[in-house]
Length: 414
Image (cartoon, rainbow, N blue to C red):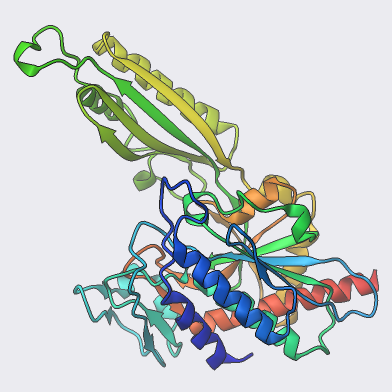
């Protein structure tokens, strides 16, 4: 694999501001995503991938042509162009640390420090080339590491036509970070039997489960009147909302109190005034059926609150976001089996893991395209302390190539 080319690719991508924006009706939500997509198309065409194109929604599709002497199934790889709105992605100044010697990493600006005590994977990264931010922005390894990995794997396959594989479809989406990554994806247009998102952390992990997810919007309506004549007449929606939120558990079913396979109810955003308040919450669980229990808990809290504020009203609306990919992966066991076999062919062992979140693969799987998630070498994502390991990214490139090869070989033998 071309280590230098992979690094230069990644550094090019992270310097383009592709921050997704919440609440924007346009798709994609930011112009930088279109700019990055155009760059990807140019690079793909320069590799000799003639059908590379960016559609009206900014989604990039392309095909690495098959080399197998007989027809075999088409597989796909997917990553997303946008970065999280939680931390700015404007003006990213990546720092390259070659041959990391261990210890805390002081970032150039904002007095930020990536501490080993908070980043256990650093202990396994001695000798790696690491890429960090300067401390004022995120890095964007989520998911530009995935982009760079898939692009480098595609380049390698185009350069090494002796590797036997079927058609390999590439799909680069937009606005994944705001839950709209596959809003304009046509599964039939991808035309694959499985898809692998490259959007995980670390190396040699294959995510086979995600949360099932819903969002909830709670509208609290009070009675507003001038405070000078408010006695016995005003019902302050802010106080009603505070009462409602105080009834939600903090020692359980909260992100700060859960881990592993525990779900949560997460108040995310609140806005409004005396007359009306809106609260946005996330409902998450690995067991899809439990989402209904979480929504019921919100309604119970609302009912109890209204006993204290009988003149108020509370309306709760929930909306499905995505489902646990495990529910769909069982329909195509080769998706995971062949990925594990591919890594074994490289002398490595895959670790099946779960994601306390979701990926484009969650929705793709729900839509009928089984899509487990692969490691991308990213760490501490969505943060000014985000970092990535070039060595782990290179391992992921090898894995992507090996997956394409394994699918080709297995189907030729079938």
